[in-house]
Length: 330
Ligand code: NAP
Image (cartoon, rainbow, N blue to C red):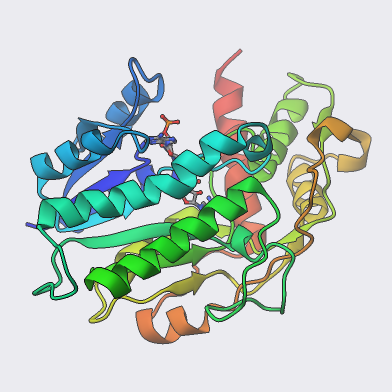
């Protein structure tokens, strides 16, 4: 039986990836941080077959212990400070977690596998790093592929660039099977409620149900390549099943603005978003990423990967889910 260790198991992608790996017959361990982490009971209820290990990306020894305990075949590093706006307020924590946390994960693999030079025999522990399209930032070309230069525009993006290059470096230095998936935005009903898409789907549902009267948003003009999270975790797994460790861009190849998402979400509940959304400067970013568009040709050709939901279907799934949940609670 293949054994996987997932960091960030309490997050959106961690839960979908765990479900996917369990469905393939994997033994799955999930790393959870902190004392009385409020997300732990929710995660354990959703994923009762996942074995929880305690650990923190800020604590090297805890990562070595976790890896020694579960002896994984595959490690998926999804843990991060992942909310871009937060990364300006907590830039140092973001660098420590989203950047140096990747180094600590790679060091844990290297130490547990006893790798000291470049002559590793066999694939050893395979490693997936959750890189991000935010690394492209102020884009140098459109669409963006694996060869597009990075120009990050937030402390989050900068930390992800470090995580990306240290993954490449450990692959080249120690011959580790280490892949970096450069994923464009992916959303779902499990997306955190602060993120723009979920804020819009939840806001539309709550306004429709009379639980809220307006929605305060930041910039809705930026364009993103938005996909469906369960499709993206399939790509993570596929990357680790290839004969060679390589990096892949994952995106839909379609670009839509936050405004388009808002219009569709409110239309679905029979409302006009212009009547309810107000722009609030508090939600504007100090440096904006105007547009991102992924070219996932390599993943399509080598992984056989393709998205399953259109943008319109994604909005529909998220609004339906929030309507259903919100109609059951006061
Ligand atoms: P998410 O929902 O925000 O989950 C982040 C996870 O990281 C949570 O489980 C969180 O645990 C954990 N974490 C934070 N700090 C930690 C620490 N010090 N030690 C251990 N765990 C820690 O993020 P997501 O949307 O699932 O994304 C997964 C990964 O993909 C992230 O690295 C993200 O940056 C990257 N990514 C996401 C997207 C996207 O569109 N979703 C696109 C590209 C890349 P707590 O529950 O304890 O806070």
